[in-house]
Length: 304
Image: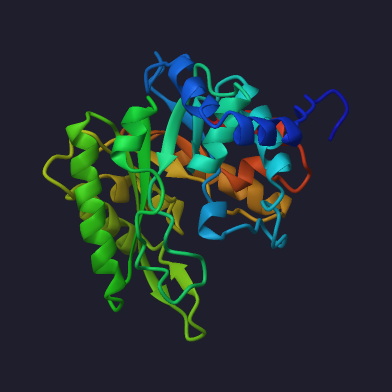
């Protein structure tokens, strides 16, 4: 960490375990007293830090295969990111959000619950992405602000149809509760080695946006969470596919300074488009190659 940069808050794992074992009701109590805010502030923009990767077994960042495996370290990075000016909130699964509630780190923040994590990274059933995380009723009960679901579609894999139908019903259930749901769509394919890859061509991202926009009985509470296309010059035409509000996803941008600068420039251009309202990024902000979480977060906020 560079001299003069904010230090990460130290997380007392022993105290978290004590609360979980002796007072499990403390999580619900912390959720009930959490200070809430509107989804959007006056500037109409969102910067959300994502940390729902571990629940899908996706622990790697760049060339570091288990970078996200240390929970105390992850929580410390999240607390630092959430403390930076301009960061609106966090996206995570229940285990992480429960810890952040117990740490008192979610007051005045947007809290988004991750809903489907059943498509484990590298599994044969990866595209049969079951809803194993938050249910709409959980998000409502805890007073959280939104949900997020992943929608990966491979036209050759029947598991995608199961996910598509489940996603539509989740959109309906969230709308019944007047809760925003962020849909993250991809057109995917498998390599000859069986690895799942996302198609970031303009045509594929356009199709994924069109499919995601039409889910459910109403789109009134649906947001999109979309990648920047392989050629960022295509983004204006791609984003013209829907009038739904959208945020950009960060993804794993690697460890090289060149890759990071290229990603920032892609985000900067896409953030000027009328439907794009912000950024949801996780690994790229929480695990920068130089270890300087605060600077990575501040740079991303500055793009807005």
